[in-house]
Amino acid sequence: MPLKQHLILVGPMGAGKSTIGRLLSETLHSVFSDLDKEIEHRCGATIPWIFDIEGEDGFRDRESHVLNLLLSEAPVVLATGGGCVLRSDNRAALSSHGRVVYLKASVEQQLVRTAKDKNRPLLQTDNPEATLIKMAEVRNPLYDSVADVTIDTNLKSPKQVVSEIIDELELSS
Ligand code: S3P
Image (tube, rainbow, N blue to C red; front, side):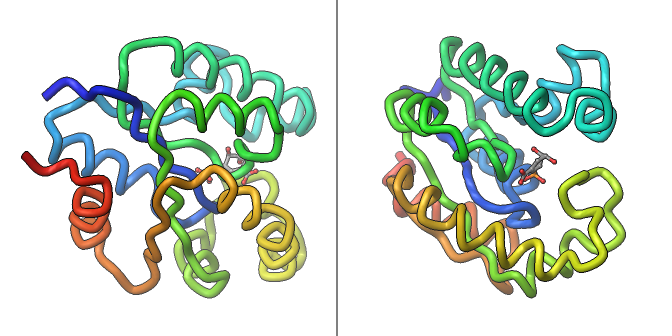
């Protein structure tokens, strides 16, 4: 079923945006895009490499550019990266191009889901828990500000979360 507008997943690292986005798109028989994967594909480089060479600012520029490209194309289920909401221009673009679902996760759940992951440069710190807590303080209000719907993912299976999204957005036919 072609979507009428983008369904955009936002939320912190380890909230399950990619897994849930993919399952949501399969359930709705629609197309799935993952912003981080699209950035990597278009740059021919991995996220850690981009952070290494260009720093976070360089990555954010690329992220905004690819986000705007994807939002200007046909509607998809779009999983964004956790920091996508940091720029106000991105937040405005998200809000005006689709329905935004905020997938909430506790720091405990994030730690479990991101343990041993080397592909998230911002978590390569001595104390990932403290890093996630600081990020949540800054970012949670930003996720709230763009969200049409907020879903708590803690201790829920991807299937459960997908069915909640479908109910909340009244997507079932
Ligand atoms: C980031 C989250 C990552 C990725 C990059 C930066 C962030 O995406 O975009 O490492 O700033 O929170 P996920 O949320 O998919 O891990």
